[in-house]
Image: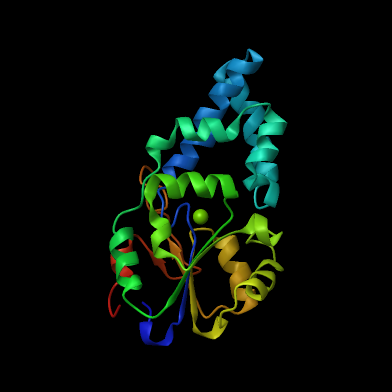
Length: 218
Ligand SMILES: [Mg+2]
């Protein structure tokens, strides 16, 4: 799928790429509505009816990924609630093996996530994946979500890399679109970001179901 000899920099998304999106899906679709219902004396169905359209409207914007924004908006301690559910944070199959292989190469490996720095810290605490990266970047520190056309240029100014010898692996197709516009050479999607949901049919970009498909030649 990739000729690894032509790649110097590996850019990896976190949630839904390295980590099971089941945590985030369960958190936002079930756990937050439940806590919101308790706080506002609503049924779970009423809470979901209020929250899901609100989440939908914010999708792809930097605030959507901001724990402080949601804590303020919903009057819930979002970071505290995430810590309560932290038992569900787990890597997707064969991720560690893939990262170990990368570690034995000369390639620059960077984690590039839309997750808020607090969410990133929680997930690194839980998984210890931080040892595998030369840098870990939250889009909150860049000032644009990864979907934004200005993200990649701003990111590259702070963390230099050659886009013609780079690969981005990300489960979010809008992010792959913005990276394509910017000119990142290889773009790979993930067809099973949530271990509890069926495989997605992705045609726009090459897609892996798990990381074994990328290990050939590495
Ligand atoms: Mg993702």
